[in-house]
Image (cartoon, rainbow, N blue to C red):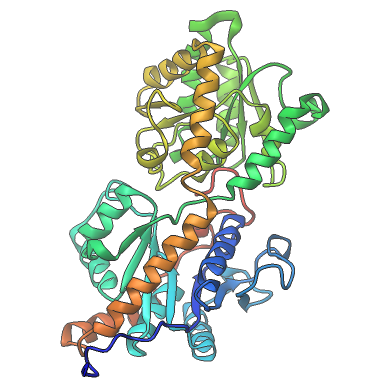
Length: 438
């Protein structure tokens, strides 16, 4: 007879909560993918957002089985909330819903820390979703020690790609409990919408869209320093000199604090061919992707770079900085675009010239390669990766030993951090989804 200690556990059918500080369109696609994956195992998903997002982003009631949406605060912006209020409401919602596993986005927000603490105190599985990689920013011994303590409270992780997995393991997570797939977009949406644009490009009013009549490069960003747009302008000027009259225009989609600086640079240095269409919401983005020749992302530092997913799903070759996190998994140099050093104007310009001089058939093959590669990263990859992380987390949580003194100290530290760390609403991105948010 099998002893109780060695009997297999019954499949876990308890619900799963996913905590969002603030929801954007890409999060909705991921929540739906998670609900589809977990519904196949008989589990519901609670999408728990701290502040209420745009109702239009979410499916009508009944359109996505197994997905429950709950907002902790209905009419209040994140910046108006105190950490104590966020922590209290988070615990209340978890106590009401009683999930078997809780998924938190990152480890630096009060709701994430409070949920990790709740999981350990209530013997529930905790899953951290992380986009961090080792070279995001200078690392310091104290902060890395704190991260290790926090990650030790989690049972598994879902991360972006290979460099993010390496960093999670470096911080102490067991390799067999780290899974890939958190950085995805709705590929089907971008494919279908851009194909429709290309089928009838004459229907697009380019001037009303702020675009030139001829071919153009596209870049989509918030206009902030780490996006490296002044260097892109310098490289574009060099590119124009290299290819002469055949040079394509450059469309910089987005807005932000560096807009006056970019306007002044274009004017003072007389850089011809640059178009600034401004911010465009997600329902208009396929119009720009569908008309562009290629996409360029010159960021100095980017944990992932979801705009690259969007561009590839739209069938564009991509020229991407070597410091952008997604390039390890999504960009094959010379196959679906080119890589460059973002600190070298010559390398950026060289990549542009190199792509420009490809034949039509070579460009077409690169566009096809983009869609082939991104097909391995659909929205459902998030759902499947999360399902793996949740199941691994549940197994690990059952094997936990009684809380040690070290665990108790960590829980006290997390409680202290959850009530004192303070990020502005901008930590989640701009008030509405901007091109270039990752």
